[in-house]
Amino acid sequence: MSDDTKPPADDPKATAPEAVVGSEDLHATDLDLTEANAAGDTAPVRIGERRGMFGPTRGSDTTGYGGLRTPILFPGASEKPYGSYFDELTTTLEQALGTTGDTAYGSAVERVVVDRGELTLHIRREALPAVARALRDDPALRFEICTGVSGVHFPGEAGRELHAVYHLLSITHNRRLRLEVSAPDDDARIPSVVETWPAADWHERETWDMFGIVFEGHPSLTRILMPDDWPGHPQRKDYPLGGIPVEYKGGTVPPPDERRSYN
Image (cartoon, rainbow, N blue to C red; front, side, top):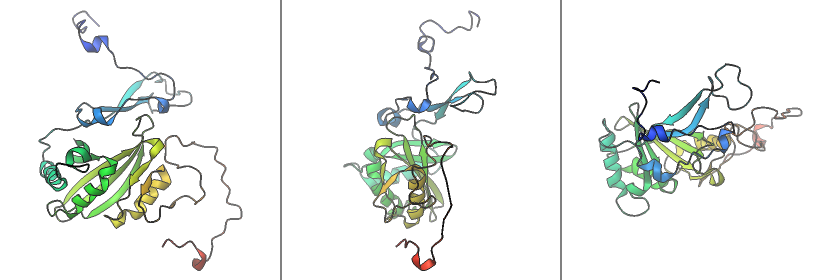
């Protein structure tokens, strides 16, 4: 770098370069993402780091790019005007929730993210049932269908390691919306939305099965893909990649009248 292109001495970027995660396991790294700084920060949110060409964190590098470090960035909070129908939607939701109490819009919605033409509302988990009912019942919102519930695991996101993502559809207004709710790894509890959207029943079961998120109030939170006695949750990023003893010797399928009744 020539003298003409060097940053000035008082440039904060020159005196405080971005910290680089060392060789320790990224899962143990505290990225210091809290609800407070995530709510109003429009800067991209760093949730991790990609290593090498293909992003492996364990084993030897075979690509020759082992020293490559690329931050994993998610879009930060958006500011109004959002564009499209997003402004009308959020304003209507704010009116439906009110301005006081624990379920008021300012308390319930931690962050609004508009990215790639899609709207995501990050919801405080305790306020999820109230937000869900408002989105379904308000005539100007009318999100009648929850088309799916997905789980996400970010081991480095301290205090917000597990996320449940709800994909909503309004047939009345031909609109889509995404809700995202986080929970800490040591308290993986999120209220169930089955009472509001019955179709979320099996989606929540699958998310519990794969990620271990406990949906409180679910009518029958049992495994749906793995055997009932399967240890752990296979799609978590701290789940072992191999070496799991599996045997199907002696496996039987009970007759229909003897199988476990879901109801």
